[in-house]
Amino acid sequence: MESRTDAGVAYGEVADTPVRALHLRAPYLLFLGEETSPLKAKTAFGLRDWAPERCLAQLRMPGCSVDLGLSDMDPRSAAQAGATSLLIGVTPPGGRIQPAWSDVLRQAVDAGLDIVSGLHTALESVPGLAAAARAAGVALVDVRRPPDDLPRATGRRRSGRRVLAVGTDCALGKKYTALALARAMRAAGVNADFRATGQTGVMIAGRGIAIDAVIADFIAGAAECIAPAAAPDHWDVIEGQGSLFHPAYAGVTLGLVHGAQADALVLCHDPARARLVSWSDYPVRALRDAVGPYLEAARLTNPGARIAAVSLNTSALPEAEALQAIEDAARALGVPAFDPMRTPAGPVLDAILA
Image 1 (spheres, rainbow, N blue to C red):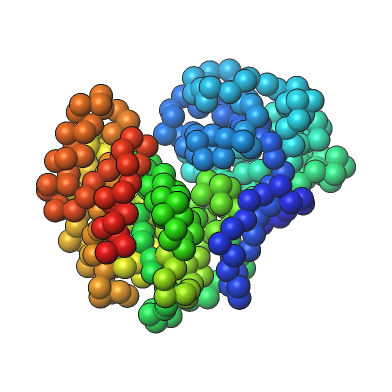
Image 2: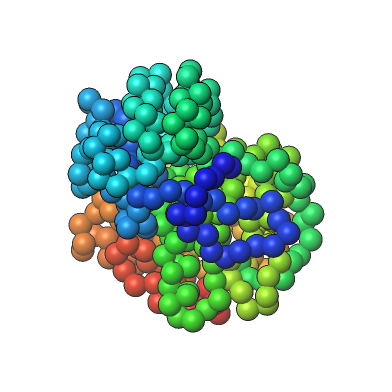
C-alpha cells in the first residue's frame, strides 16, 4: 500500500506483522461514479458515517442517484476548497475501475489530488494515470493490495480476546457492528481495537488487510496477522466479510473465521431481506439456521467459540417494527440483540465480555 503523507488515522499498533499503517491525505472528495444503489456505495457511506471530519464533498457522474448529503464538487473545485484526495467510494461489478471514469480520475490528478481506491483493479492500470500522477507529484493508493509477506495460518491458540462479526449475507452491517462495539468497549474502559478486514475498514482505521484480495492459502494467516497475540485482557473487534451461506464469498468468510479464532461471534442479519443481494436465487439463511454452521467453523481453531449476540440492520424498518425485530431475534437465539445505529450496545457488550 503506497502512502505519501501523515493524514491517516492509525491505531491499535501491531508489532512484527505484515499489517502496516496506511496514511491517506484528508480531506476527501468522495467519488460515486454513476451508482444508483446505496449498497454499492458502502465505502462512501462508511467514510461519511465513521470519519465525517475527513469527508469534504462528493463527486457524482450523470446518472448517479446516490447522495451522501455532501456538497457536489468537481476535482478542481474540491481541491480549491481544501480536498487533498479523491477517494473512490463505490464498488462496481467485479470491483473494477470503469473505463468511463478515466477522464474524471485524470482531472483529479491534474488538480493535485491523490487517488485512493479499494477496488480490485490497480489504479496504475488506467492508461496514462500513473505517468500523470508522477508528473503532478500525487499518489495512487491501492488500499486493497495485500502485503507480499503473508504467512500461512498456524492454527495455534494465541493470547488476547477476540470478537468477530459474522453474517447471513454481505453488506448488512458487519463493519458498522464491529466499529460500534469497539467504540463502546473503549468508552467503557476496555482495552480494545477495531481490526479491519475490508477496504473501507482499512480506510477508516488506517491499518488492516482487505482479506478478499489475499491468495486463498493465506486468508487464515492474514487473519492471524490482523488480530495477533495480545495482552490477556485486550479485545480485538474484527470486521467480518461475506457469509458462510454465500455462493461466491463463503470461502473468504471461512478463512477469516478460522484465522480470527474468535471467543465471541456477533451474528449480523437484515430482517427485511429475503434474498441475497445480487444473488436473488438464494434465500437469506434464518438466524436459527445460521448458528450451527458458524459455531462449527469457529470451533475448529477455538473450541470455546460462542454466539454472544445478534446485530440487526433495521434501516428498512420503521421504529416499532425495528424494535420488535430486535426483541424477536434476542428471544430466538437467547442472546442480546441490538441495531448498532439505532439502539444501545450495553447489553451486547456485557454478553461479549462475560
